[in-house]
Structures are given as C-alpha cells and as structure tokens.
Amino acid sequence: MIKVLLADDQVLVRAGFRALLDAQSDIEVVGEASDGEEAVAQARRLRPDVILMDIRMPGMDGLTATRQIAADERLDGVRIVILTTFELDEYVFEALRGGAGGFLVKDTEPVELIHAVRAVAAGDALLSPSVTRRLIAEFATRAKEPAPSPRLNALTEREREVMALVGEGLTNEEIAARLVVSPATAKTHVSRTMVKLGARDRAQLVVFAYESGLVKPGWLS
Image (cartoon, rainbow, N blue to C red; front, side, top):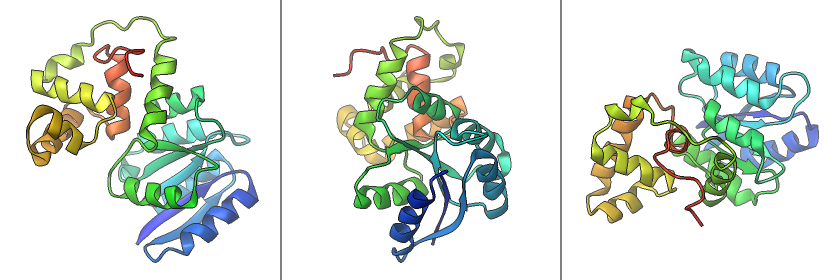
C-alpha cells in the first residue's frame, strides 16, 4: 500500500485528490496538511511514501517544507511531488534542487496523477520529463556560466556520459539503447553516479548536470 500525504491550502483540492487516490486499491491517503509547517510535522509523524506538496501555501511554503523534509535523514524514503498551477515556475526549479522528486501541474489528468504517485513511490523521478527539461533549461539560462565542479572528478567518463543523458531526460532503457548496453548496466551507472554525488534521486541528478555545466542549457529543443 502506497501511503500519501496531501499538502495544499485549498480544501477542495485536497478533497478531490483524496477521493481519486483513495479509490485505488494500492494507494491510501494517510494525512492532510494546509501549510508547510503542518506538512513537515505530518511527514515526521506519518512517514508517508509520497507527499503531494503545493508550492504556494500561507506561512511556511512548499519550497521551505520540501527542503526541511529532504534534509531530515529520518525521512530519507519520503518522496515529494510538487504541485504547481503553472508549468514554468521558478520555484519548481528551486524545489527540485531542494530535494523534490518531480512536479505536476494541478490540472493534470487523473490517470497521470495516479501514475505519478505510483512511479515516485517506486523510486522513479522527473515526472512530466519534457516539461521539467524545459523548466530547467529556461531557468538555467538565466544563471551565470557555471564553473567546473570538482565533484565531477569523482565520476568516470562513462558516469559523466550517463549523467548527461539523465540530464537530457532519458530513461534507463533509453540510455541503454544510446550507449548500446543492457538496461541493468545503465541503471547501475545511474545508481553509482547518484551515490557518488549524494543525489537524492534522478531529479537532483538533472539539476546537478546543469549546475555543474555538464549539460549546457539551451541545446535542448
């Protein structure tokens, strides 16, 4: 059973999500929060698998709550999906940097929301990957040219290559096809890269790929 915590200041939004998710045989909404502070407290008490986190809430916002949850070692297994009204939202990039596993726009189709919860609970990340790539590219172009990161020295040439492909938004299967290796080998390379860089998930790996200069913003269509 996938345990979900809903964090949104709009009661109707929470009610709609709860009705949709609780109707699934493998998903259970275990709690609700109306602001970031309550979301952090509920996360620590309930230890959900997935948190659907509104980014704009009164008091402590979803961005600050995401950072606090991601920094809490006791909540290492909790995955956060940011909910936003707009696809290109500067706060979403900050949330991905801060530890969110991905994001969804609030008007997403019900089937996509259900798939997203299951995917994140299974350890996948970067929901709506094409939109996420556009968002990262959009805001990375506004940043200064990154200096070469010494952390890249810990990676092998193949691991750098794999991280660049993750930054492009490719799945393990697509990386395997591009490099002509097995999906299992591609997954191993991705996992080792995440461990070496201390990345929480693939979303943070993508952010690091941009911030380190390994992937140049603007070259993606």
